[in-house]
Length: 187
Image (tube, rainbow, N blue to C red; front, side):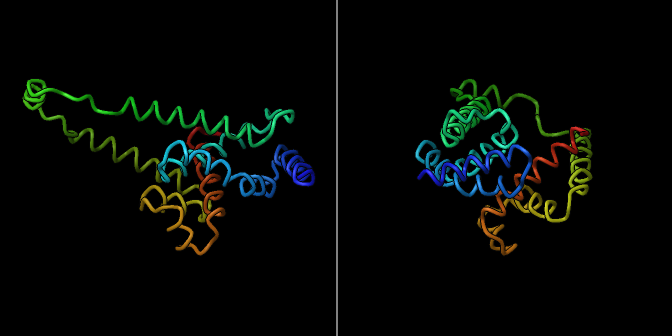
């Protein structure tokens, strides 16, 4: 076990310097632990995948702040717990409030709230702008973004279609999202 901790620390140090191979090593080494921990909490594979990917994205963005006095896995689990809490808050705030029959009837008498022609135009312009940003990515990154968010494919389906290992797909999507965020924010 001592050899593993030395290798892990070496890869953490390399990752702090931006070494992509070290990031991949850390993701591969700790993925099952983070995924397994979160799956027990969420009991939902899709949510767990999203939480795990978000966890590693945040960890890799903030790896310079990692304190080696604590276990790297402990740090990752703490991040995963926070990501899960954030996800629950977002879900809770987006849930519909249950209504009784009288409120339900009042809701039906409210004017139609479907999108106006202007709303549709704004949505189309935003989508067109997003597609322009996506086109600035390398083709491999464009492909995973398109498959995941426009075709709504699972990570497994993406891995099979591209004929790459599942972890490669996860890493590629992680990088694509990070690069896309940088393009959108104008960095």
